[in-house]
Length: 103
Image (cartoon, rainbow, N blue to C red; front, side, top):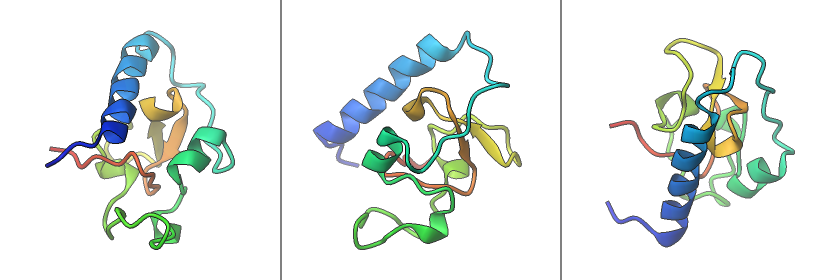
């Protein structure tokens, strides 16, 4: 799989923030709003069914935060932290353009 420079930068920032945020408590992390500037830039939707497929052609049916490599929520949880958004909680059924399929 080819990795674009933009994609690499997003992943590098995510990994870096994961190490910085790993010591913080995630229990009281705020829920990410779709109106958050980073969420807007990456096309985050709380419900993947509402993704604009013309604006985000990378989106494929079945892609959700729950099956993204960056999602740190527990299996079956409704929300979980995402390092892409500074550890804010995202919905498991959500999606954004930083999506990376779990290996």
